[in-house]
Image (cartoon, rainbow, N blue to C red; front, side):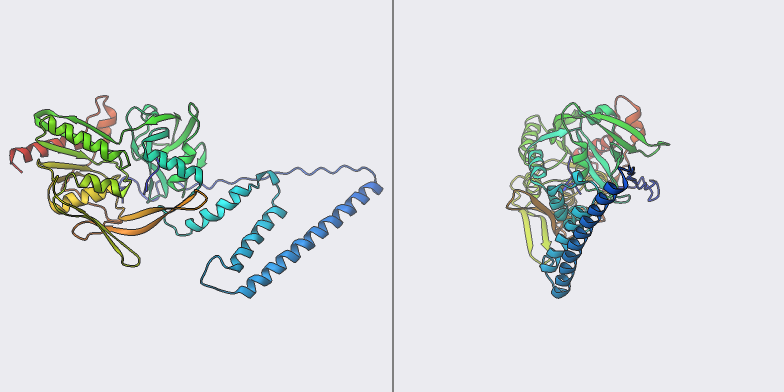
Length: 441
């Protein structure tokens, strides 16, 4: 899945653990010359040379004209001035005149390359350009429709490679043996170094019943793993819940989408009907999602007051508050980890600032910025980082994360080594919740 935006969680991996391998492609062209006779050969050669000279002269005139116009325009504050437009046209002319394979020149790709390059120049992994098709796919995903392998993807900031942030239950990713924190080194033998989550997800997606091969770096393995995963339609609920012994309710939110609010309200209502005396809210590996979704869910849990506020570069502040009419009436434990990011950190940060729950696990990702999707007239869009967000106490956690009240490192060896999947973090959360319910803590 996309990430969200998709966007300090990598304690297990040193900076030099992955070898950066640049792929080179050598174009080998065989040149064969056959003589058809000196006269005809000379005539053809002469005509070709004359034609080439004409083309080169024409191109040189074009280039000189544009260079002169570039010099005349000079340095201006606006990027898209006449000089820039001329230079873009000049680069296009060079490609069309000189690039050796006409069939590789795609007008649409050239155009979109300009837009993607402008956004990429920010150096912000969370700002992206979406084509019309990409925007449609992303909006479908927020409605709970997903086509692919059933895994969430984040960017590993330490290595600039994408990684598996979440493996959803009952999906091709789980069946193939992918794990959280697996570094995606290649997709179908194409390096993913420096790619955005959108580009990586687009490579992983494909037609149903086709396969994709992921080259994986996994901590503890002596070599890369090559894992083939079959693509298919995946329907992923964003909320899972059940009752535990002694009136303890468990609700997991995997991400904050349009469908999440109703799913959470239903799960919380059913927990109350089943005699909930305490709640474990699992936000582990939740990459975030929509701000309005996490605000609405927070309003079902928090006391009266601030949930989160944002500030843009102009100092404009937007506040999101709670009226306190639905404050949670039972003890609360929140599970977090290094892949809990963005919107999930907003909720965890508010719980911590108000002191209404105990955070258990490891320090969160540390994404304290907000993106907006700006639609364009041709049905494409630009997602751009527009502001920082702050917890109720005024903390910006970007690059820092939220530390747990009780640190508990996930025992992956035990979890993946036992078919029963023992979860030591969940066990710790249940223990702490019982103590809170008993009034011991």
